[in-house]
Every structure is written in structure tokens, then in C-alpha cells.
Amino acid sequence: MHGFLTLFYKENLRFWKVGFQTVAAPILTAMLYLLIFSHVLKGRVQVYEGVDYSSFLIPGLAMMSLLQNAFANTSSSIAQSKITGNIVFVLLTPLSNIEFFAAYVLASCVRGLLVCLGVLCATSLFVDLPLQQPIWVFVFALLGAGLLGTLGMIAGIWAEKFDQIAAFQNFIIIPLTFLSGVFYSIHSLPEFWQQISKLNPFFYMIDGFRYGFFGVSDVSPYYSAVIVGCALLALSFAALLMITRGYKLRA
Amino acid sequence: MLPAIEVRGASKAYGSLQALSSIDLEVGQGEFFGLLGPNGAGKTTLISLISGLAKADTGVIRVMGHDVAVDYRHARRCLGVVPQELVFDPFFSVRETLRLQSGYYGLRRNDDWIDEILHHLDLSSKADANMRALSGGMKRRVLVAQALVHKPPVMILDEPTAGVDVELRQGLWHFIRKLNDDGHTIVLTTHYLEEAESLCTRIGMLKQGQMVVLDTTQSLLKRFSGINLRMRLVGEALPDALRPMLAASSTDEECVLSLRDYAQMEDVLAQLRESGCDIASMELSQPDLEEVFVSIMRRD
Image 1 (cartoon, helix red, strand yellow):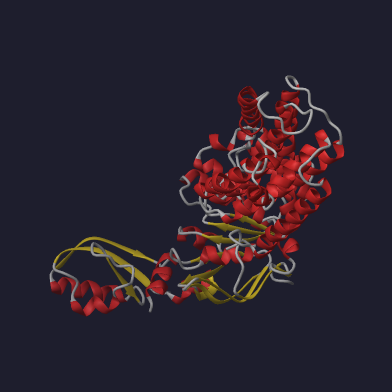
Image 2 (tube, rainbow over the protein chains, first blue to last red):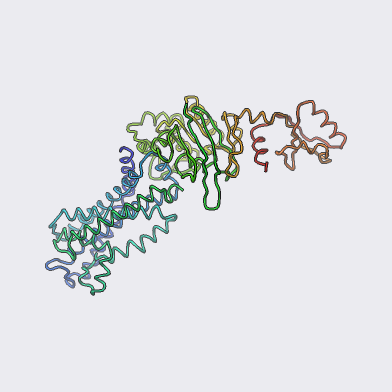
């Protein structure tokens, strides 16, 4: 257990030591999104009855930041350790496969949740945000961070070069987050694109998370929780299989 | 007594390259064992299999009786490995690095031992320096310290003195010899064969993934029990009659003749005189491990 706690602590220390880049910068980016989009679209778009567009936008931005940073934490840590070779210091130790997996993923959850909290706190200075069902906010924040932390682990193990991580991030993570309803409700889309959006697991994370704030969502939060939970289980199984088999870790 | 390391029929292939072929090896507890071989012979692959950094295709490997595949947690607890590459985590200081490494092995409050290692490796003044700020030699010493934090009974050092200056190399060997005296089993790979000769009690030589020699250092040296006559000639070339005596370590500039005993010297000098060869320099020596190594590696 102490081995797991040490790796978990080390992963937290690792991102905290460069906190400006890993925590402060994403919060600033989210603030800029809020500033620009709410300036351009405020008063022109009414997504939910009685919900101001700026308020609608904040949970989406917070969740988007959480997802991207949870992914970045595991993927960059593992890829960097593999490429520079210092991952041997972990691989030589008696840490079990599950401890290895859990320590990296939980540390990515910490970073994701920290950024998310930072975005919510910073934006609450400017916009009133209701909090109708905090339990759903917490559930979807945790599920989302776990899911993207696990996906980041898979990407980090798979990647052999930094540009493969960048490609994963730019061609998969960012399009899926941008097209998941961060800036709009999928009900504003034509029927065909609504159905396409429902194939995107990121949509359920953001929609369920938003439900916690407004008590309104595009689909039931229970349904979203089941979808996201199943995706988390499937990816966790895949990541553990990679670690157990030593795929690209123990050649 | 259980062997410290036991390898039975271990093989490993990377695609079409057979890196190791059915290796059998046993290293006893408390031994100082040298694993030698040219670049690409499979030394690092064998170390990777023993330490769990790679998985063997066939065979069984045990460290202090623990199977490295089935009982990997116990096996890794018994093993400290100093990797060949100069790797480090740039986010942390020396002390943080060693505390974290202790933690991975489940050790809390290990600072007394960490301080002792830092002292022996002459790193105490750098304990709070970031890893990036250290010279190559210091980083190498931190690698040794990392392998020692959990006091493993078995240590594997993969070319620990590559690129290290003479003073540091001697200090490092002094410390590692002390560890061996204290009961640690040491497995060493090195390209400095004089080091292996003076430190290792037993030697294994790998060539193209196969263990071609496995014997005590003394027995290996005895196999080549003659005398070497090392000469630089000017004028005529070495007479044909002496060519069968040329040792494998001869070069274009310097010929080395293997003599049975000192009495053979007189015949050799007589033949050189008759052929009109002038001797620019001459030296007599006992064969060393390097010559044994070169001779074995040149065999088909």
C-alpha cells in the first residue's frame, strides 16, 4: 500500500511542481473562452429556459478543462518517463499492476478535479451559477476524470514519440470535447447530428455534469452515468491488460 | 543454500533477432560475478529478463528462489539494478528521488540509510540539488544509490563505470567491493576487463546470445597459462616460422607471441636475429582476462 501511495504522491508532486503550466494555465484558458463566447453569444442564445448563456457555458468549460487535464497528466507522465527511460525506476519495484494503474489514474483525477474546481471558483466571481444537485456534479467529475486519466494512460503506454501523444490529443480528445455540447445543447442541432452526438461518450459526461448545476439535461443523468461508467470499466480493463502483458513497457 | 540468481533455459527474441538462446546460469549468494561480452551479445537483455524489465520467451528465472514472472513482487524486492543508461527524473532533487524510490519498496522513514548511502557515494553535499544540476558521474552515483535504497541482497550493475573518470571509478569499486564483503551478491557487466579480472570471482561470457564461457576467473586465466612476448619490430617482418605463435591480440603495429615458457625466448630471439629483424621494444607479460576474452570472441 505504501508503494502505491508513494507513486500517487510522486505523480501529484510532479504536476504540482509545474503548477503554472498544469493548473493555472488551463484555468486562464477557460476564463478566456468564457469571456469571448459569453461576449459574442450572450442574449442571442437561450439554451435552457431561464438559464443565462454564460451560466450554461461554465459547467461545460469546467468539464472540458477537467477532461483535457486528466488526459494530459497520465499521457505526458508515462510517455515522458518511457521516452527518457526513467520509467525503469517504477518498473523495477515490487508495485503490483493494479497499484501502478491506480496511482497514475488517481493522480490524473486530482489534477483534473483541481483544474475543474479552479475554473468554477474563478468564473463564479463573474457569473451566478446554481448548484441544484451537487452529488451529480461530483459523480460526473470523478467519472470523467477517471475515464480520461485511463485513456491518457493507454495513450502514454502506446505512444513512442511525443508527437503521437500530441496527435492523440489534437485529433481525438479535443474534437470529441468540442463536439460534445460544451458550447451548445445538442437539442439545437438537426436530428441527424443529435444522433451522432449521442455516440460521443464525452457528451454524456458534460450533459450529466451540467444536470448537477441546473437540474436540466439533454438525457437522463442516470443513463449518462451508466454510459460513462461502462466506458470507464472497458478502458480500465484495456489499460490493465496492457500493463499486465507489459505491452510497450516490458519489451 | 539457494542461488542468488538462477536462470534455466531462458531465451528471448526480438522479431527475427534471437537476442538470447537457452541461457543457463547460476550465481551463488555472496558471489561477485562478471557478465562479459561484446556490444549486442545479450548482456543487457539477460539483465532485463532477470529484473523483470523484459519477459523471457522460454525458461525460468529466479532471484533468491522467487520466480521473476510468478512471484515478481518478492523477486524485485531482493534485487537492485543499476541501469546502463544515465536516466533520471528531472522533476526531483537527489533526496526526493531516493525517498520516492524507498517508498516504492514500501519503506517509510528511510532517511538514515539514505544519508549513509549518500555519504559513501560522496553525494551528501548534493542531496538537495536537482538531478538536472548534477554532472554525469554524479548522476551515475545516484543510480547506484537508487538501487541500494531497499538494501537488496542481490545487485546488478550494468556497465556502471561507462564514461566515469578514474577517481570516481575507483571510489565506486571500493564501495561495491565493500557491499560484496558485507554479503551482497554482485553481478557486473563492464567493458573494462581489468576491472572484471580484479573484482569478479567468476565470469560468464556471452557471444551472439549464447553463454560461451562460464568459469572462475582463475580457471579462465589458467587456460592461457603461457607467457606473452609483446614486440614492436623494425626492418624485416616477423619470420614465417614464428607466425603460428602469434596471439589473437596482435595488431599491425605490435605483434604478440604466445610462448610456452621462458626457455622458448632464446629460440624466438635467435630466429629474429637470423631473419634480420630489429626489436624496437619488447615486453613480457602473463595473459590477462582481456586476452582470454579476445581469444574466445574470435573463435568461430
